[in-house]
Length: 480
Ligand code: NAD
Image (cartoon, rainbow, N blue to C red; front, side, top):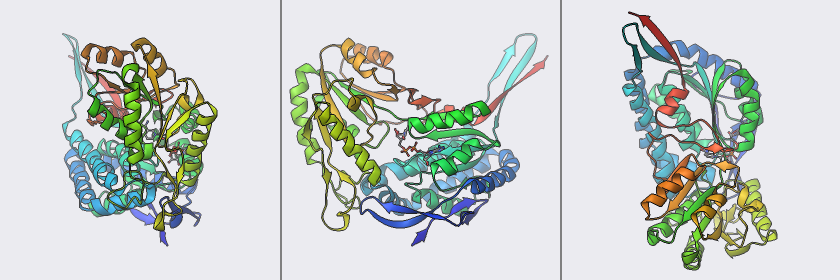
């Protein structure tokens, strides 16, 4: 059975403990590879390697960093098919989705930050007649990047790319549930000629490896994406150490649909924003508020379309709904469907585990599920489920729906459907969300600030926000 290795100091190595964990294929329920059960000793090796690499890497001209990172882009694009297949097997997502979303985006992340590093300029401020100030923006040193399982290579590279491009050396941990593409990336880093120690990937459990990264005194910043509870644990350790922290956490995103919307476009996009990646995208809209005049029509059309989405083997081209990521996660989602019924909800469509025939008979599949009849304030509508489950609710006024939308503790993203321009701007300004999509969803421009408010996190990723995060500003004042 394939044994994944850590990538430390430019080499693929065994964990210090010699122990391994099982890695499951969620579409079959079978163990198909083994992950290093690393611990603080491996993190220490990663930090030592990163420290040793930092002086040279931080002084490497941006042009050279650009060339190395662009070689990595070319290798990711060369291996697109095999990386997409690996992602699909590891995560359960449809191969067709990994091919057009996850892997191309990993390449884009490196391309975006490789080129950004070539075009970054620092500010200067003239104090007329007295002085010129200029800002030096210098890399932090060794930084930690910790990522989740839902978009494995996509989110892993979203952190690593700006960190490395701006001259830092990284100790990174992918999710133990989906480690495979990070392992394949480490091989590509070797092939691309990334200097040893610039990126170190330590696999293993959050409370062991992740916690050791967070607590390490020589790691200057933590960029984390994952659950809100884990974010809290990380902040508790890192804040008193005055580490820079970027926390991209959970969500419970509203999708607000007004009667004057472009109906067909809204319906097609709402299907995607509800069930893409089995609803396991932090930006999915799980609370759908529909203006009353079109509520019944929307309900009928949406349920008809949701119930036709093909659930199947993620490796088959026609599959739209693959497996959810793990057995415990499947059980969590099913328990929320049970809770929705207890809270008085009616299941309009789905609601059950699916037992496929053949290869995937023991996989973790759940029907796309549409629920109605719940109050906006019940637990089903307040807590993050992170699966193919949405709740639909009617509303009458703007004020009312804004109250519903903002009633949760989260504030990651929101979608608004209306052809009324003034209303779109009014609602966007009033929503407690870091990312607002008007008449679209997941239309990403990598230059824009990305992140959430309230319990969805602190800080922003993307564009110059990430380059600022991974650098320390220093003002130099020169008297004239
Ligand atoms: P998680 O918090 O369980 O794990 C995320 C990562 O943190 C994993 O690598 C895990 O091993 C590690 N970890 C766990 N405990 C740790 C600890 N004590 N110290 C350090 N690291 C630790 O999250 P998950 O289940 O992998 O991912 C799903 C969550 O991620 C959802 O809540 C989802 O909304 C969120 N998410 C947010 C965004 C965003 O951009 N805001 C994007 C994707 C996913």
